[in-house]
Length: 146
Image 1 (cartoon, rainbow, N blue to C red):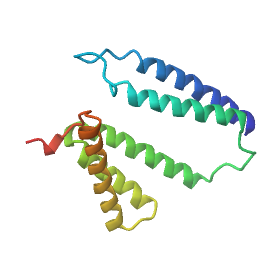
Image 2: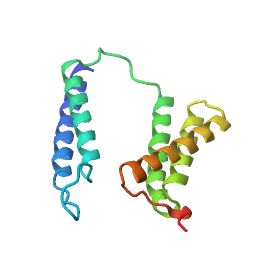
Image 3: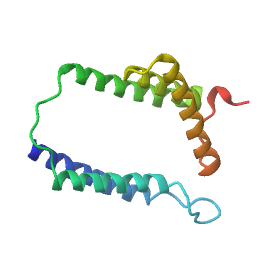
C-alpha cells in the first residue's frame, strides 16, 4: 500500500494546487477586495488538502488488509447521502437538507434516532448562522423562505 499511498498523495497534491489556483480566479466582488471573499474557503481547503497529501507521500501507511465488502457498502451509502444533499439543498434549503443528511449519517453510525435528529438540527442551524451572519455568505433558504 505504500506505493498506492504515494501515488494517491501525488494525485491529491495536483488536485489541491489546481483547486487553489482556480479559487484565486474568482471575480473580485463588487466594491473591491474584502478580507473574506468567495475565494477564502476554497483556498483554505486547498491548503489543508495539500498539506495532507504531502504527509501521505512522506509517511505512507504500512501495508494492511482491504476493508470488508460491508465497509464498501457503507461508503457507497455516504456518497449517495452527499449526492442527495447536493440535489436537495436548492429546493428545500440548506437547513432542512443538512439536518436530514447529518441525522441520517449519525443514525447510520449507531447513534439513537433522538440524538441523531438533535445533532442534525443543531449542526445545520449553527453552520447556517456561521455562513450567513459571520462570513456573510448566503446559503439557500428553500422552504424557509418567506
